[in-house]
Length: 246
Image 1: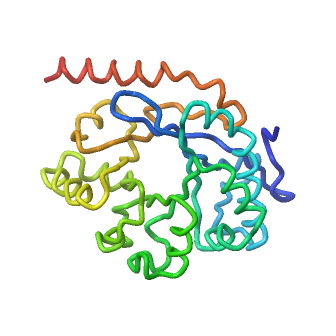
Image 2: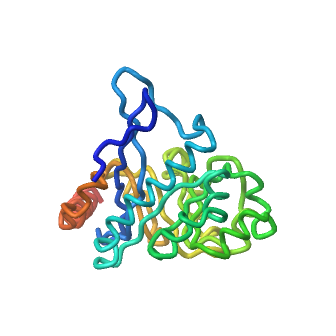
């Protein structure tokens, strides 16, 4: 197993799994994220990778998830990975990558709101091809790069609300109206950026899932050690404090 993988001569990365939690504290799945961790160097964003490096990175990420497939299958959990335009192309064209994806139908592809021509929906060729093969989620919705037009085709299984949008608006009366409009297109809404107990109070019942630093991430290498009881406990504690405040 890779606890740290050499990306190039200067940068190291590791995979972490950030839990996505339902309103009762149950785990829907995990988003696999990357932490670049070479000492003395700044975080290395994937946008700075070469095309070949992106391909190798995506393949390695999927291979690491594939090694954990029994965990995800046995617990009926989803696993999401992020894909930019180049990675989306590899998901369509590269046979080794496609084979891993077909072998692991619990994997979902997250497309950011800043994806090229996102508003084109199913009419955007690369989105149409992705939708043909995979289950898609839209990430960072509300970050300002698109609008409801991007989701009207119904090609997204889940919609994840941008954390900064949530932070700005969770106590705004219009917040519930926005969520209602989104839910008329996609019933599964996940709110990112839930980091404090009071944020939970800003979530109406229409929100299906939550994600954020309120719940601890785990190393993908050690995902089997996840304490699922802790997520339920944290939700119950938060609900108890919320009821006392009310």
